Amino acid sequence: MLDLDASLQRLFGFAGFRGLQRTVVEHFLGGGSAIVLMATGDGKSLCYQLPALVRDGLTLVVSPLIALMDDQIEALRRRGLPATCIHSLLDREERERRLASCQQGHIRLLYVTPERFRVPGFLAAMRACSVQALAIDEAHCVSQWGHDFRPDYAKLGEVRTALGNPPCLALSATATPDVQADIREVLGLAEAPLFHTGIARDNLFLSVHACEQDETKTARLHHVLDHSGGPAIVYCALIRDLLRLEGELQRRGLHPLVYHGDLSAHERRTQQRRFQDSRDGLMLATNAFGMGVDKADIRTIVHWQIPRTLEAYYQEVGRAGRDGAPAFCELLYRSDDLAIQRDFTEWANPDAAFVRQVITHLAHLGERLHAVDLETLRATFLTKNRHDGRVETVLRLLRSAGCTTGDIGRDLTFLRRPDDAELAAWLPADKRQRDLLGLLRMVRYATEGACRKRTIHEHFGFDDLPDHCGGCDVCLPLDQWRLGHASTALPLRRIEAPAADGSEAPLQRGAWIEVQGVGLCCVQRVHRRGKHWAVDVERASDLSSHRIDLHRRRWRALEPGT
Image (tube, rainbow, N blue to C red; front, side):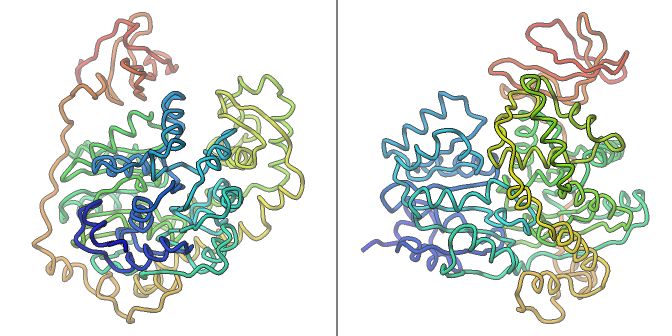
């Protein structure tokens, strides 16, 4: 008879299970599938990690972000546990080595992104490994009605069938009843039980502060930071607003970290690691940041703009206070910001005519397709607003359907045109309307003056709160809540740039350098290439962009004021 308590202590060092963990583990070990809904920080990962490590065979885990799986694998390896991941940031030799370890039976837990199943031969390799169990993390991504739909997630039901329908856990912290129904249909879990711990986070205080202009927001943000201690995240919807806020905070003496999609892979890893290791880090980020961060002591989360859905908002604030200590979460609400999310909604829902135009253009390019970058493709179809994201939406849908391979600007290859039935499945007639209704619910949360937590709980199908929760600004004055938690509020310390070590780049984003043959330049991105460094720069004389290999060019950094 397997002693689960002893295994939990031996493998993970935990003295006991929490909440429904034991029930889910026993069900999964018994060969059962399930949908598991647990709030962020409740220990979803253990529900499949422990069974994988005490049963024979390979458990395959599908996770949406490379950073997320890398963090989990690092934590498992520190404990000497047989787990690994395979993803696109590894070189081919390393991917093949890890796959061979799985095939030889040395690995019990293998993490992959859903896009990995598009790689020729990978699904066949998994079938050869005789996968014994399947775990789908962030399972709400399978649903077009979910807040973070990923087209490749929608194919995981086919993947499960190809693997012989192994027992499957579908896990999420933010799945509404409609999304739960989609999870059941897509993954073939019609009869699977639902295990849920509710979504209550009693240690979070939720607040909304109305702001008429950005100056009001900035003043309010400083007030929040001055009255809270420990690590903090400020979420911005747009990179340009993030960079503007970074400059404003720097002028006021703060040293924020930043994380967004325009950073290089090296810069994203560096910024994330600094925040992860900090006791008081201030991170300015787009919604690209968060899933891969397992940091328990985040004390403050501020949304600079309104998120698109309640699901996205609650997932992001759920990253605060995972250690159980109080945390403060505030949305800075400005009605003008709604235009940003309305644009995002339109870009995520291109009409069929636009999609067909892009497809026809790509098909006619032939071999010239390899030379086309994203900016050129945008300029072809978007004459009024080059920030319009419809082209990216079409490229994402084509790649997920296997109509293209590779990446735009590098090795994009057009394989086939989708038929009308596929286009109809990609673009359901009511999706735009439902997306707009999701934004409307978010606006109501911010403006109607009802208990914040009760509004969120009812949205997720729970009616487990009284009318007054005592944990939001509608039900309890903020100053009163702060008085009750004064012992946890420490002054926010300034984040100084850490000293460089062997893993640090010789230059940082924003530095000014003088390069032989190029002239005065401002560093835009920093890249690591094995043992060497390269930087993308903007030349001061004509604002042209260049890639500089630092080991091949003579250059010197300029001190501020030089």
